[in-house]
Image 1 (cartoon, rainbow, N blue to C red):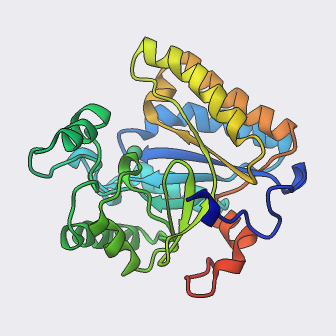
Image 2: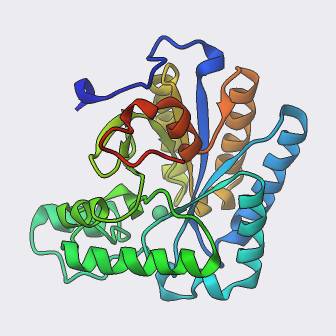
Length: 277
Ligand SMILES: [Zn+2]
């Protein structure tokens, strides 16, 4: 996979000023906005010192079936305001839970019950994946939000999901290591740092793992920070993210949305792909 990757026109040797990071908030929904609110306010305070810090918001249209985004006046007001500031909204699943029939193989059982219960697009055929994508697009349209990217819950995508995505007007998708231009699925190296903050021992491990991820991602043209609502509920993970954002700003890495970075740094892929506007 790596030998097919592209780093954009500046390649891996780019200097600090050519390096960027994307602050990505996962699982945005009416019920998770209160988790993020204080953190976003703290990021906005950093922006007063360092300049604009655009955020990529991964929006779940109907999180666990507990309420549609388009029905939430609060969330819509927040996200409309963020869009106006230059932030990006990305479609992130539909319900963000795995409603497919019970897993039958040991690998499926591991992936869908132990690794995560949230692999909504892990086992869908093209028709069912397409139906949920279309419903997600319809919610974004109802809110007046552009929809350039799609990120599958837990980054898990079935072959049917990939097919359905390629047939729809999305510009990119991603997994933990790569962005993929659509519809060709051309991979672009963009490593992520992610925590697993659900329990104390996971948080302890996450500090170690995230430091390793950071060291591996240090030279990458685009480093992605993948935050989750649960990270916001614990002081150690909340502070880790805020301190990392400030450290990256001080090191000269520039904050950017995924969409804006693709448009500026991977325009050579437009042939055969849908270039970002
Ligand atoms: Zn998610």
